[in-house]
Amino acid sequence: MSQSIVSSRPLDRRRFLMGSAGALAAGAAFRFPTPAIAQPAPLKVGFMLPYSGTFAKLGKFIDDGFRLYVEQQGGSLGGRPIQFVQVDDESKPESATDNMNRLVGREKVDVVVGTVHSGVAMAMVKVARDTNTMLIIPNAGVNEATGPLCAPNIFRTSFSNWQVCEPMGKVMFDEGRRNVVTITWRYAAGQQMVGAFAEGFTKAGGKVVEELALPFPEVEFQALITRIATLKPDAVFAFFAGGGAVKFVKDYAAAGLNKSVPLYGAGFLTDGTIPAQGEAANGIKTTLHYADNLDNAANKSFLTAFKAKTGQDGDIYAVQGFDAAALMAAGLSATKGDWGARAQVAAAMQAAKFDSPRGPLSFSKANNPVQNVYLREVRNGRNELVSVAGQAVSDPARGCRAQS
Ligand code: PHB
Image (cartoon, rainbow, N blue to C red; front, side):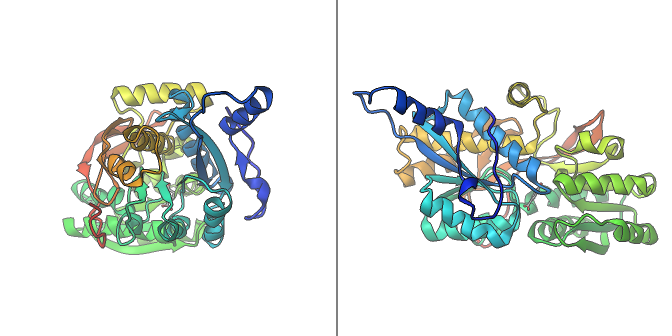
């Protein structure tokens, strides 16, 4: 059930589109007399995601993953039909408050699902706290969302920036790397991921010899790649994602550095990007809360269903969207569809435990996932599992006053 995305100016009314469930409901009301028995009112989900720019594919896969779960439940969660409204946040923090206010104020959504970019998510968290809107973050790792800004109405089905990168420090040290250069975009996610990696790496005994960065979403990597060639570190740790990750990995290989300075990173460097990176991605090792070949029933059926729906191979973004819908379903089934029973909904969501495609998934008191972090290596065109780098890793939630 695809639909077109209209994206133009940040506040353009046309960017708010009714999803297919809403359109169907409207069509049905037009054709048939009003039923005598009241139907449960639809629940309105506002997707605030990047549908354009370097993270466009990530946003689309989160959206597709969420819809896949809802479709598998017959279009309803906890007995409530689901309607969708979308906004393209363009990964622009400067438009985020307006976009969020529009979803909450004008569109009167029951829940906001978004977003990918940590800076945009920070603005969303602030509005969600001010308006007591339920927010489910299906990607952005900004530590504060489940740290100092944690709240009973803010959940995350993805990861914290700390969570997926700290375990890589020990992995790289154990592989004999001692002097490492880091490279990323200069914004919250990049800085927090590199910071978490450095925390784990220096604790193990390694040294970060230089931290390289460029503004988001720039992709002119040449000068920084030349600098790496000059420094000749034992290895590089990188965070890029989406279109930027595709270009970085290709540029790194084109400079021949993949033969002399092994490239490691947060798993976003190679997740959902390998078809576009091709051979340049071979051998890259990353840590993430997912691997393509995780041998569990939930992953196998998810990948099959996602392929059938979209014609594409699922990735971590699709999984995070899928699990966001599963989390909502946990809240709704506990209250027989009463999303307004907020305390019970939130308690059921926090207590939820799933067999996610990523493996066992539960939630911390700060509403952040507790999950395995895997070491993967790109082989045979996919991110193959090497080992479990951290079992049931929980973000320390620094600054969060416990929720319950
Ligand atoms: C983020 O900004 O938090 C972010 C963006 C893209 C990713 C992962 C994290 O793939």
